[in-house]
Length: 436
Image (cartoon, rainbow, N blue to C red; front, side):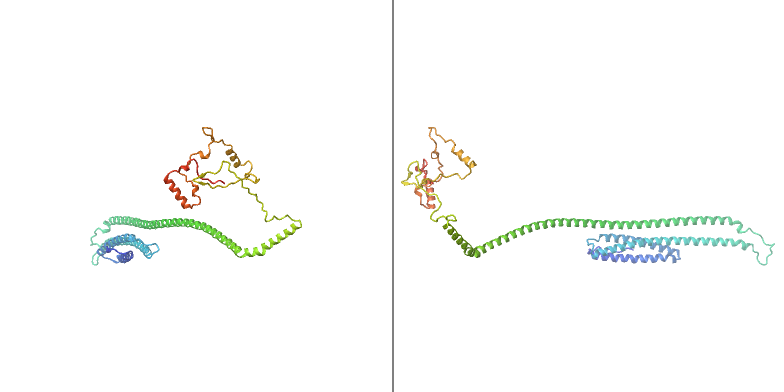
């Protein structure tokens, strides 16, 4: 019995439903085969029994093939999650298919036991038939020895009895039949035991294969779970770094906020002090204290108990005396104008300026080295001064005639002078310098 398979593409749920219907059909076929097996002992006709046996054998083979095809189709169903309804239905169908496979094997064993039982029953019937025949043959001599009515015993002819001729052969045949029956029974028992052992081994093998498949699926799920845990661990590490960075940023932001708040409070306090408290404090606290101090100091100085307050007209400052300090003659007149200068001197008995640095400091040592440096002497023996050195023609020099002009006028004058070329008045260091 074969079940038609559709080649139309179906969805996963439709495929599972079709497999479920085919599995139900196979289950019904198994029930029919089981009924046929139970009908074997009630079939007395040998021809009908042989036909029924052949039909059951073919049906079992077809049912096994259809179940294998169904298992392959059921394994092809995939793509569903482990916790989905399709996955649970697929698992249920797998269990049902495994149960049906075990039922088919049990049906084969039952069919084989029924055949063996029928063979034994047939052998027993034949043996009984032979025994009945032998029993009938044993009764024949007794019937021949009994005289019939109306006949004289002396006139009856004695013929050799059948028991005198057949007994040895009968015993030999009975012994041969018994040996053959014992051998057949022993071989049948051994074959039955071997078949049962083979069936048990096949069942255990299928169970082990099913357990191996479950173990493989569990291994794959554990690998996926391990990958998920690895991703979760990586995400947790990243989150930890992010949280640490956020905590650091929070600390710095908190410090900035506290600093800004402190600065704001200081500024507000300063504004309150300057705008609100400074005036009243100066008027009502500092000024009265100052007046009291000045009054007390004046009274004490009048009685000679305190130091004399300095007079406002007398200021402790050094008197400034202006003395001519130029030692090289009158100032040079350029372009008909006299160069402006300021005379600065130390007249009036003012003491020379003192070096503010400490005695023996590095600045004093450098100053002494500069003072003690040898002066540059020309070839004719005269000393070289700064004015004798060639000046930079690119350097801009302000003419005395430009005094009092604006910055824009001075720049325009310098630009026009550069366009005209070097002036003869600029040679020899005739620039204007301010001496202090």
